Structure formats: C-alpha cells, structure tokens
Image 1 (tube, rainbow, N blue to C red):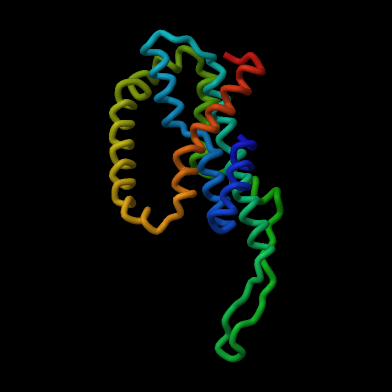
Image 2: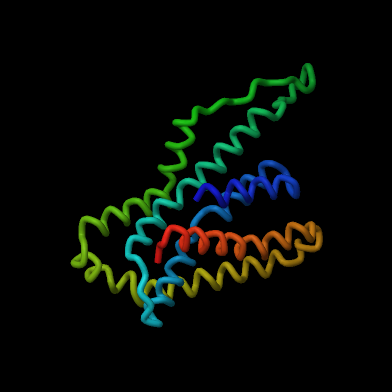
Length: 197
C-alpha cells in the first residue's frame, strides 16, 4: 500500500507535475474494491480457494495510498511560492497554509468511502456468517448487476477521454499500461517470498 505509490511517484514526477504525480500515485497505490471483488468472484466460480483475511487486508490497504498522496500534495503546496492578486498592489506573496499531519490523516480516514469500507468490515466481523447470509441478496446477484452498470459507465467515460490522449506523452501512456503489470508482479513476488497463498 506504500511501496506502489512511492515508486509510482518517483517515476511519474519526471513525466507530469508534482500534484498530478501525487494524484496518479494514489490511484495506482489505492486498492480497487471493484477489481478485488471481481477477482474473488472469479476464484469462487472456478473453485479456487483464497485467504478469507484478504477482504480485511483490502479494506486496510485502501487508506495508506490516499493519506500518502495527501501528504505529498501538502508538502508540494507548502514548498511552492504562494501568491495573491491585490487590486492595489498587484501580486503579493502570501504564506502557504500549513496542515498538521494529524489533521490530514483524520480527513483522509473520515472520507465517506473510507468510513464505508471500515464500517462494512466491522459489521462483517460482528455479524459473522449470520450477517453474511442476511446480506446475500444485496451482496450477491444485485451487486453483480450494479457492478456491470458501474463498469459500463467507467468504459463510457474512458471512451470519451480517448481524444485527449493525443496530447499526452507516449511514456505516460506506456506507464499507464505497464505499471499495473509490474505492480502485480511485485505483489506476486512478495507473496511468494512471504509464503502467502
């Protein structure tokens, strides 16, 4: 959760601005709940067993990349010369707004998506198999339909953005395609070294 955004930021800051690099690093470092659930359903469909603890790990791994990116953006914001435009005197430097790390972490963890993930994990722990059976209509067939609509919407948004690719660096496009494969290979190597199934 921290290795991927760190490596991504170090590479991406050579291709795009610091703020864009921080945002992209968080995107690559943040765990995709949709991808995770799709992968677990694929494994279940093919009768392949996997560690049940991975659902909890997914929820816990969502936050670090986001907090990391917010800290990076805050650091970049403080380092950049800030200014305001005054009608009387023109451009005047102003002190950069400083945020404490505690405040940044608090805002990152109390985001709606974070609270939903952590809350769902706690509900799952407390309710156990009984709660799972009660939620099956929502988390089973209905979820698959909602997932299909979500992925269709994402595909349409991506298709609308394709003309903008002409202005982007070929290196950035190569990174967009190759980075997930490299990150997956890194994760597989770490899992093999740690003997995690």
